[in-house]
Length: 473
Image 1 (cartoon, one colour):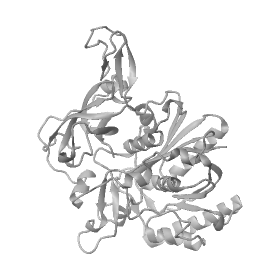
Image 2 (cartoon, helix red, strand yellow; image 1 turned 90 degrees about the vertical axis):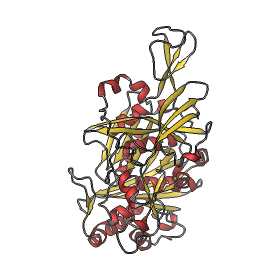
Image 3 (cartoon, one colour; image 1 turned 135 degrees about the horizontal axis):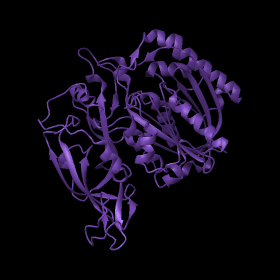
Image 4 (cartoon, helix red, strand yellow; image 1 turned 90 degrees about the horizontal axis):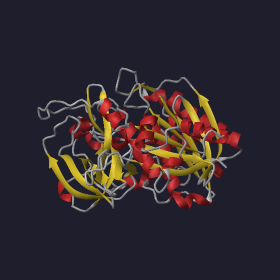
């Protein structure tokens, strides 16, 4: 039996009320999720994987497929970077899948086929997006940021895959040129009437015919859409009960998270699913992918995740639209006049075990643990006699912290800039950047913290990433 073995998700801390996303007149209802200035598709995918693999041995994962339409790189693989940061083994199958809003569900199908073929026993699928709509547009207002992760395999399956259905179409409704950072949309009426609505309805009808089921056989219907009204019309046309059978699209609290949207809604459905439930999932974008799932008794083993619903409970409202623009790097203020430091790629490569994998060195002579890795033990001075230890899954407490209200790098668009010293339980101490800490008055020495992979700074065309700490959400 091949299917989903675990699930996870990530929703950024920040939210923006839609009513303030207008120049004049009344704004929309609800709020949308907003990624921090140091977050992107790579960092959010890693946080989703951490949620998905809680309590698991990540070394057993043999493949990583990452789906996104907003990669921070035009030529560099996110999947490889995520695998390195999460300390996956080197000989895994890694690939990025993008350029379509259904890329996440396409990646799930490819992962299932990989497991079925015997090429890998466990394959991780992630979908993450941080798309940009043009300022004050409906695309920007309806949008959202987030990520989902699904672990596929053939053992300990919590939801078995009963079948797939796919079709492709060259219909153009939303697109982003390679030279543009903003997503564009043709006439909303044309996009819905000629693209989304007929294609989604036809695909779901054809899929149910292939699977030999009817709407009454489906416990929960999960699918993406551009907005709440358009989304609801599909279920109504296919005779599904919107109140009992359709997964809440979370437009009022999350927003359309692009390629991550279908899988995030699936995670939300799995969080409340019961053994025996039948879940029909569809993803629209240059065609439609459809998947049928059957929930197993093992679903109860995956209840200790943050998931979508857990992360939605933890939030910080942005006070203004200008603050949102600053997080998006669309509105700049002058930072302190310090000489910009360009990340050294050679140094990052040499220190990758510490910077990316979060490994420390443990002296074999005296047992001292030091971060970053050092060839010479600072306690007994033995040389090259150490072993690497993993810090990522160790419990962390705040030892000391400081903040600077005048940020020294342009990336810090939500001052103050935070620094912290943290203690890993029974291990070592580390000084690093602190993020997502909200009000400084809320921080307490000794409080639990957690690690998060974030962008450090960007100078020119070089992007550097490393682990930071943040209060436990």
